[in-house]
Image (cartoon, rainbow, N blue to C red):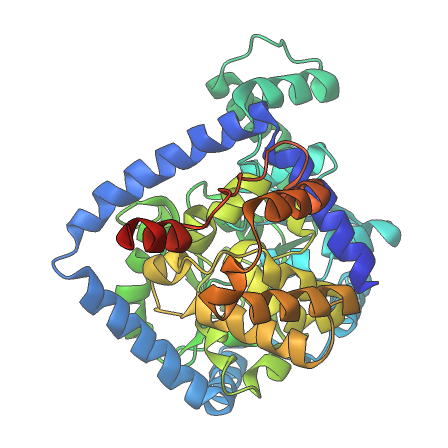
Length: 460
């Protein structure tokens, strides 16, 4: 299984890396992101101090994670809500299914949530005959296309305006010459019908607030508010690592998340949900459920060297900084969480063996660590995963022998110099296509090494 996944990754990576249209679209969209974030960082009087403060809060929270989760449960329950603990994705699906069937819900609207992608909620609801509609515009586009999110913040980053126009033409008969504004208005009209018909709204949570017993959702389209305002039932599902100690922490984390996710000073809509509507309140859901999802997180939490990865606030900055991600794209990873953070956590949220190949999709350039708003040493964690993969013999025997042979040869210059350039070029040509791909030529070795040439010239 591990070998087949690795080979699939290599094939997909080679194909997409040389797709010029894909490269053009990604460079255009990421270029806008980098410009916005670069300007946005100028708002900080001391960006490093903000990152340090955010990292300290998250590390403190992880050190006391059980206590803060229990505090949240107590306070949210006092507010009239219901907390459900899901050890696995199957547990979460079962809870959601039981709630929806209990209330005879036939359709739901859903705001953007990577946690629901993680448990494949849309697929599971479709299987039992419940319509699930994505209401975030990017998620709505990829759902119409029968795809999964390409990026944890920008789900349709891989699509150009022309791609969306073609999709809307196929699905709705909309003109291929439609403007972005016209397509957005069409989506708004289609989704408004879904809001009015839905029996329940499902959201994720950017943060869980322990002292208020609430969950926070940050967005730019108002679709999460609509998804919770119209239906009579609100279900929120969140990973247990999303908790923050205090409402006061949002003064840092809301703008910090927006800045590193999109370059904004703060997202357009930021909502704290603390339970169902009270008797004195005319609007809002009559019942609210929060499902706290483990699904492998305690496995990561138990590992001292890797636990810090649970500090992630899902801003997507590491993806946008990663040279591997920018070349191979989101779908090549074939995981819910892509890029550097996905490379770190996916082997521990799921099967280490199935995802072990992701640890080689990294140049260890440390750019991801440099941009992380909560100072997760991502490149060090990826290296730790590699060390574990080697120690547990997850790499093929031929690869292990090859690396040992290379390490032996490269450990001393005299060993490298013992072989002439002609033999080196012969071996490189023999293995070049397999190691380097058929789109590039392996660099040519000089007949004599620099060291050998230098010695000869010095002795003249």
